[in-house]
Image 1 (cartoon, helix red, strand yellow):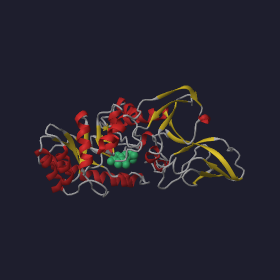
Image 2: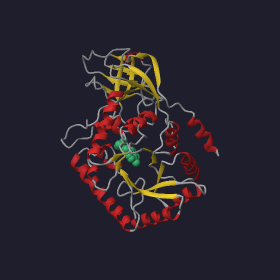
Image 3: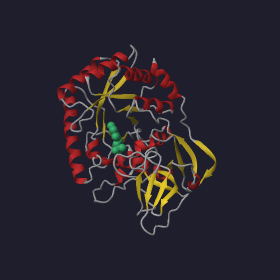
Length: 388
Ligand SMILES: Cc1ncc(COP(=O)(O)O)c(C=O)c1O
C-alpha cells in the first residue's frame, strides 16, 4: 500500500538526542533556532503531574504540541497515563520513538488512515482512537483483520462544532455497534472544548467549561445506565487545566501547550485576573538581527517560516518596549523606541512563540538549553510534518 512508503520513512526518522561535543552559547546558534529550556520544561511537567495528582486525576498530554518522543518519555516518567496525538502519522512517529500508550484524538473516516491505524495497532496494543460516526466506525472495522484489535473512545461534542457526535441516540448506537464487534473495545469518551481555552476571563471560562462538562457527565451516566460504562473520560486543555479537574467524571486531562507556553496563552487571565503564568515559558525562537534599514528598525532572520501565528506577534521578554512585526517568510522587523540602545546588529535574541504547536512544526530540532544557560544537545522533532 502507498502508505507503507511513508510509514517506512517515518520509522527511520531520528528520535534520540544528539549530544554536542562542545556546549554552545545562545549567541553561537545558527538562527532561527527553536530553543528549549530544559529546566523550565521539567518544572512545567512536574507541576502538572502534582496538580492532577492532587485532584485524583490523570494527565494524557497532547503530543501534537511537541511532536517529540523524548518529551513524551519525560511526561510518561512523570506519571502521564499515556499521550495524545492529533493524527495517525504522529502516532507512527511516536511509536518509532518507543512510545506505546497513544490516543489519536481526531476521528478517522478514510480507508487509507484506518488501514494505517490497524497496522500500527498490531505492534502497539496501547494505541486507541476516537470515532464520532457510524461511517468512521464501519471503515475502522473493515480495516481490521480477523485477529485485529482496537480500543475506541466516542468523541462527544456539546458546543464547539468541530468533531464529536451530539445526539444521545447516535452515541448509544455507536457504543452498541462497538460492542457487537469482538475486535473493538469501548473504553469511554472524549470531549474537547477548544473554543473555551483562550477565553480571557477566568469566571466566564470556568462557567462555560463546567456547563459543557455537566452535559458530558449526563451522557456518560446515560451510557452507563444502558450498560456502557466509561473507563476513560478524557478531554480539557491548558486553558481549563485547573477548572475541569473539579468534574468528578473526568479521568484525565489532555493538556498540550502547558509544557512550553506561548504568547496566546500568556494573554489569558487567571482566577486572580493576572496574566496566565502558571507555567513557565520553556520554548523560544532565537533570531539574529541582520540589517538596520533605518535607525529605529532592525531586521531579524525569522519570519513566518520560523514562527506560526494566527493573531499575536512574537514577543521578547528582554526588550519589553520593542515591537515585532512580521516582514514576510524569512524576516521579522523590530521597531525600536526612540533612544533604544540595548539591541544592535549581529545580536541573537530570543522570542516567545505566538502559538507553540504550529511553530514547532516549522523546525527540525529543539536546541536544548540546560541550567548553565548553554545548549548541550539537540532533540529531533520526529513528528515534524506529520499532518495526516
Ligand atoms: C483534542 C485536543 N485535546 C487537547 C488539546 C490541548 O490543548 P492545549 O494546547 O490548549 O492544552 C488540543 C489542542 O488543540 C486538542 O485538539
